[in-house]
Image (cartoon, rainbow, N blue to C red; front, side, top):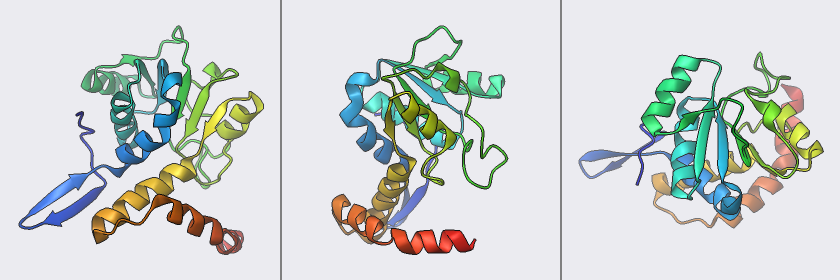
Length: 195
């Protein structure tokens, strides 16, 4: 078992607080069906989400993990902490995961591509954890290259589902959450247009 050294959920259990990282759980679920494509995985970003992603990658058996970040010192510290390498451009990733906010609506980098995205090529697995908008510049580019694209929206839903189940001690099936998410899309779109 690996540690993310980060938590996004605290649950009171008797007299103590227990910390969870539901990003790890969500990413593990999303990547497990693609485990044969995780020979060399490039993780863009070295923040809190990247920590959960790297732990999940190790749990699903990724063979080689490299990190790319704008801040080289931060990337080096991150690589040391998780016993992975810095992306130097010579590695040939089979999977690319963006954990940065680049491409997110309302940010400075809303129309930009995340670090080292130039490595994308046809047939790769591309996972953008950004969930708004659904189709970021990275997702659009990956679709054009005929990559397998994994959704930030699914990560958002899965980690929230894990949090809800932890908080409530209920065991709502994930498929039910997916169905309800689809059902409320018209409402979400209506309010998105107003803002």
